Image (cartoon, rainbow, N blue to C red; front, side, top):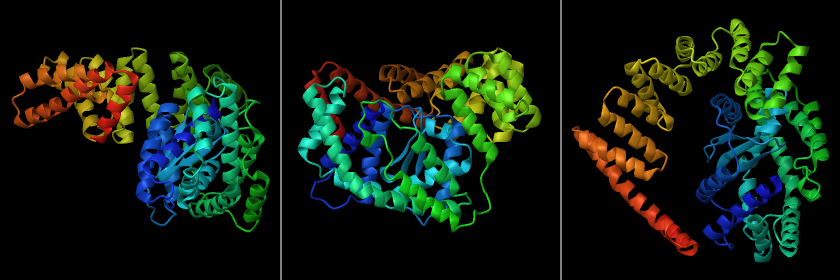
Length: 486
């Protein structure tokens, strides 16, 4: 599966570039790379589950930003993501999108190791290695490209023997072509990554220890995957070079945050790994270190995920006694209390979390839900509206704000926010229904103008959607292309 995903992503990259830019063009420009990155990101989201945990994503981006702060002005806006797959890997895509797999991050023991991986991938983007490789990929032969396409659309296992052989052969040719450049690229990314790590206050040994871990574990696993896809290029040589570099440099004064790293890692293991394995992991860890608060935290989160809410609360309270001003702990306790129907306790915990986190949207959302259940409807609307004012993409808020206004008898606002919710979910029929109702009850000129504008767009989208649904596959493809052009 990992092999097919990797081939699929590389194929999409090659096809998109070949269609967008002539094969005879020089290395792609910054603007072209950004355009390609947008399309590539859509494909990644189709094929991978990205972890959306606010704490984990904020933390990983924080480490990434520390590394970026040591660089000269960059042409791209970098973003860091965690893929919810138990794989030892990380990669960068065009225009500064950096991805690390959950499995690799779970294998880390400290923030220096995370910084090492991120610094290496940032260096690939900084040196434009990706754009250079894309340019070379765009010049591959049609036969090779056709072979890879066959593997993507029919699947390695589902393809005919001939298509399967062609896919493997063309991928091998492509891989061989790229390996001629990979040693130099990897060496340069290591050297620049080490310098950037040191400048950001990280011990560069973190990169070396992670390379050792990656070497010790095959990335893909299945025996039928060709060997050239299961080994990292020049790993031994790279580790020797890094070790030599470390001998010549004293570690800087550390700027890492051990507790933040532990929380992020505990959340990954507890909330995204196998539930039974997570519970066993924390049971074993508590047997060795019964007083470690981070282990109690992880065990509490794993118990919460498995539905053992009372036990989960016990372990989170142990951590809270040692860290009474931890906003995330209070939020998790508040969520547990809400799920258990202990609404008064939930209200207290969530208010404490918000006071400490300066308006965290997840805490505000849970607070609004709690206030709604308690019948504190005016307070609930204030909580939901604060989220919308500052975090417009927190989509579920629109639904519950609409529901709250409905409970209050304010139907024009209820229909309006339910309409916006449906619009954002691309449920055009529902959006039109609610916004038409909102328009009937609205006297505010600016609100009327806004709704009328939205309805005009939504009616067209709904009409196009219905027409598309009635078409044959071929005519639908042509229709979608025409919509994109216009």
